[in-house]
Amino acid sequence: MAGLARGVAAAILLLSMTTFGFAANKVIIILDASGSMWAQIDGKPKLEIARESLRTVLQSVPTDDEIGFMAYGHREKGSCDDIQLIVPPQAGSGSAISAAADSLKFLGKTPLTAAVKQAAEALRYTEDKATVVLITDGLETCGGDPCALGKELEASGVDFTADVVGFGLTADEGKQIACLADNTGGKYIQASDEKALQEALAETVAAPAPAPEPAPAPAPAPAPEPAKPDFNFLPIAVLAEGGDPVTDGNAWEIYKAKPDGTRGDYVSTEYGAYKANLEPGDYIVVASDGQAKTEQKVKIEAGQVYEPLFNLNAGTLIIHPRPSEGADVVDGAAIVIDYPGADMPATFYGTTKAVLPAGNEKVTVTIGQGVATETIPLAAGKTVEKDMIVGVGHVVANAYYAAGGDKADGSGIGFKVLKAKKKIDGTRDEVTYAYGPDSKFDLPADDYVLIATVDLAVVEQPFTVKVGEFQDLKIAMNAGVLAITAPGASKIEIFEAKKDINGNRKSLGYAFDQKYQAAIPAGDYAVVSEKSDNSSKEGNVTVKAGERAELTVQ
Image (tube, rainbow, N blue to C red):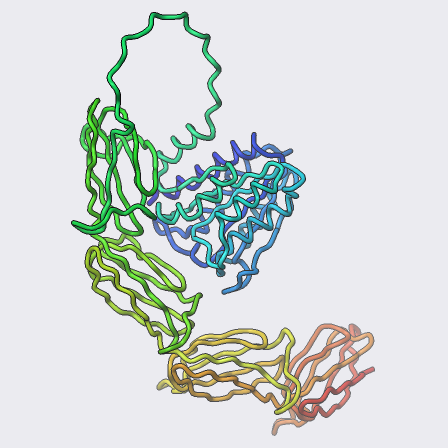
């Protein structure tokens, strides 16, 4: 796995040397900032590897190259519109891009098709030469079609190219986005092995075209050679013994074999029904489909045709994640499958169809705060299709200043969900939280307490969740809005009007300003304004639920 991390850095570096240096005047780098980038390689999050690789690459880019930076999935969870051009294409943008990458949050979905389209438009691809470099560790999750987009951009652009770096993708996954590069004349780099990646790029991207050699002197016509077959290597992959050949979605990795039988130099990666003419010699051939993989040593001899059989010993698992019986599939549901022989469990989203090694597949589905885990036996050559019911109810929470009144929609709105049952020390376990109006929660069946906050007003409301039920929680805050103006003040502070037994008043909130506005529980209050010379003025005000109160203290 360490090779993968180094391979990604090498991929980006070589792309910068070739694409940036020779192929385009303007380039936009698109970085996948989805939540899956928190996955680790050798104990280090992929997002950190991407940041460090970018920083290294950008130090080697000539200062007059115009480089831009775009990211998706860095501001909102579950949003397909979370795409942002953070640094427009400009010369000397390396430090700005590094700083932008370092400040990203990695939490959202993967709208890679829409991001590439927006980057092309930002580069005015129908008027000028344009290049986009996409770095992604996942596939499209927002319904886009990267293959169709590649054809569209190639057809309508002046000279548009998309290079794609698949960060830790399987060969099957890589095939699904490689078409974006293929359809625009770009390169797809699968960062799965450092040495193989460097050799492939050196041969296909970095190596200059050789100078033409002088024409040789005419030679006597050679004697006719015996006819050669079109192909000498025609491997077949099956999921199970006696099964039909796999011709779609599978991949072949070809390596030279070392004398000790281990993998040597990388030769190529091919997809689907594979036919080839290999030079005589010893090879290691890796056949894969989805998460299933097997390899064989193959010896090629001149004049012979080889048709080796690769049995993947795998089946197909189809999972439909649902919050409750009969409910629609949740596209944002996370599905983690720990399959036999896995170094790291595979993660999918929404309805999932995966080819997996035969055996017991441990499947964990998460929707909101609900989690369901099941072990599903899968036989070689078989397909198992299953609904997995997580068992949650859906809750939407909103705060209202008063029952039947206006809905609070400012920036100071927050909701926290706690378990209703108290622990032995009197506290409750926190379950989750959200901010803003129309906050949504998917929760397992149980009794809960919702703590709603609007500025200085806080209300607790118990509620019960039942599986499959929808609740629209409307929290009456019994609060109004207090707007204070204090000309010349350096500080405004709000106190409860009533003093305690010691003659003290409780402070509710303050601002170092001449104006202060906040939602506050209905009641009587004293407002003190302080000036920089330590003088102060005091005013009194009554706030009513659902109403606005204004006070000037001077």
